[in-house]
Image (cartoon, rainbow, N blue to C red; front, side, top):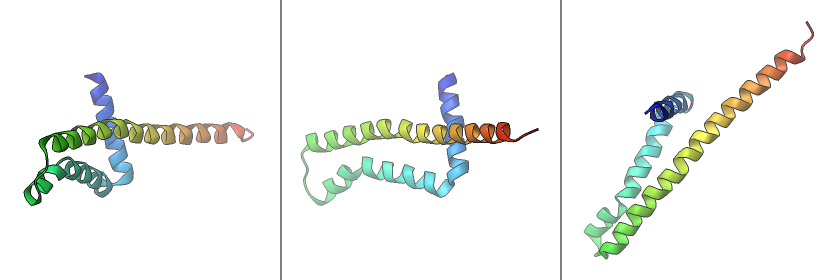
Length: 93
């Protein structure tokens, strides 16, 4: 449960840094992509296996790329703090 709380804290930092609109856009694109087969199924007849495969694949992509985005955010923050630490230690006292 502690990992989940840390994930939510990191996501909150990401949202505050990049704004609600960008975070909401990512969520909406993911949800829309998840239900593309249902919408297409209303227009043309799709085999069930295709719809199920699409939804599973889309969900797996979400699980792959979500941690990558969080890693990028954490790496950027770590590099920024390291550069600030080096900048303050380089100055003569």
